[in-house]
Amino acid sequence: MATFFTSKASYQLNLPHEATESLLLAAQKSSHPPPSDFIQARQQVELMLSESLARFVFLNSGNAGPHRKFFSSTCGVSIMGIGLIPVLVSILEHKSRWLRFAAFPFFWMGAVTLVAALHSGASAGHITFIYWMLTHVISMHDYLFLRRRSSNAVI
Image (cartoon, rainbow, N blue to C red; front, top):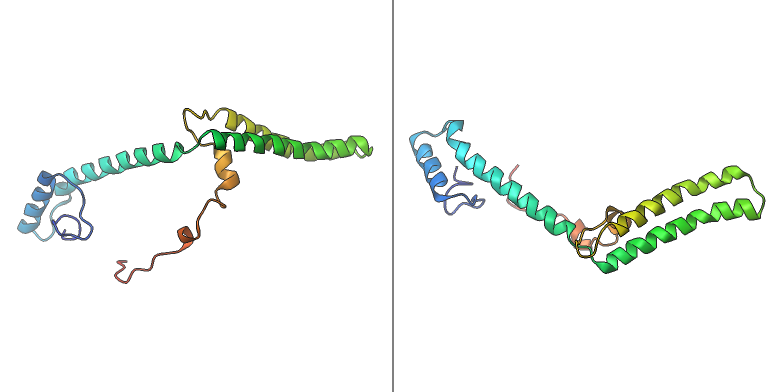
């Protein structure tokens, strides 16, 4: 109780005063309050988590602009261009037609990338999955890979 509900708690939950007071009163009456005393606090925490998730998804899906749209479109066209290589080799060098099947994954990936880029309007600000897939590793900073060491870790 002291970890989450007292005013000076290290992990104090941002709950309404009424919910916190009722829990603290229940804790004074019994060292182990019944689970029914936690219903209001649980509902408040779940509401805060769902609102936080909605804000997180909205803010993280709105970071695409015209430059990323152009990059994704260019990647789509480039990937489709790479897919032309096996087709041209099979035609110009009179190779087997089965070599043309090697172009299918490139055409498919390029088309998906291009369509996803074209459907992510710059005004709507939606990031394309393809952009994330192509650049998520290079956009990570070194400090994001470091784990924070805590001396007072609770297991």
